[in-house]
Length: 414
Ligand SMILES: Cc1ncc(COP(=O)(O)O)c(C=O)c1O
Image (cartoon, rainbow, N blue to C red; front, side, top):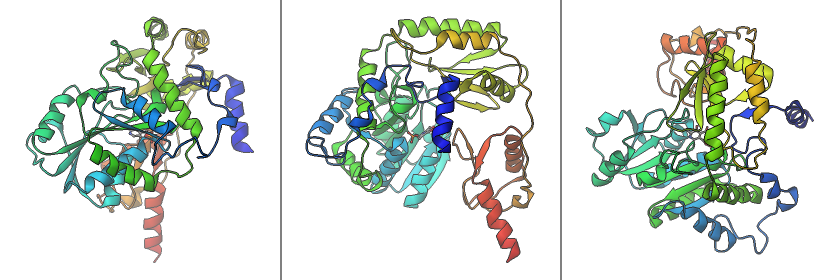
């Protein structure tokens, strides 16, 4: 029972969450009021059919669709990954190629690779020089770090005027527009498809996501694929948490959030931690003079768990504090005020030089953030290997590296 014991230990230790999911160990909102093991039912009469909703789940989708006029909504229990891959399958029936703008999550590459479609990674500027008819452009906004693509509305309009389609991976943006003080929801950009992970920043269970589609025919085609890829045993707990998160979103008042946020930033600065605010007020990027990896470890040693650490800093996802939440805010400030630099050891650098110049046979992905460093089919360069070694020194998990090594070691033995 090692997993259960591990989970219990985090609970007992009183770990302070600065990471997803947005319920922050059930201290933001009160999910435990609606999430009870006894509600874990199957699709018995009265509980509707997730992939052909006509009753209570249809009602839930209708409530979700009210988030932004002109969209059809579908609650999903297998995350934004499911929505992105299903959307790529559906749009692949209409387009001949895909464009990817910015740093896309691995699910985008997985979808495109599964349908075997042609794709090009382009910049925002290159969009205006590209042939967009019969193409689909995939955006990621907000980025993991909370930065928003400021011109996305114009981009989407331009794509539509040039007979193209658009998908926005808004996995990190389900809470945007929660009040007028939070930057704009990506639903306002009017893309053909927007997918949001409700679980990341709102109080919902992990895997709770919502697909939003403009056109009903496209929505039905995406549903066709969702029906193929998503579990046929949907979790009503995850679905109930989506409804709960939507209610939370509809009723949220940000007064306490901004007060506590200002107090937190002040406390971090007192501890000589540099704070970079992001477009999304619920994201902070932190650094200090001993380096980002040391800062993350120092936080962890005091029981504060961060969302991610990269060379750019330690990423925190702030709780959506509110009247009556039970988030351990005082404890958080106390821990920061007592923060001392941790003694960090270097991670083991594996011998990966065998991969130089080889064709990558499985995407090499630092995780998090889950943005591929080397894609399958590309040549692995000395520069890529330098990056991987740098990550290994800093204990960053790299997916796919061992697979590539095994592949080429075995090939060498043949
Ligand atoms: C940008 C981005 N898109 C998509 C996903 C996948 O979302 P989900 O975990 O809801 O499947 C992630 C997960 O971290 C992500 O960072």
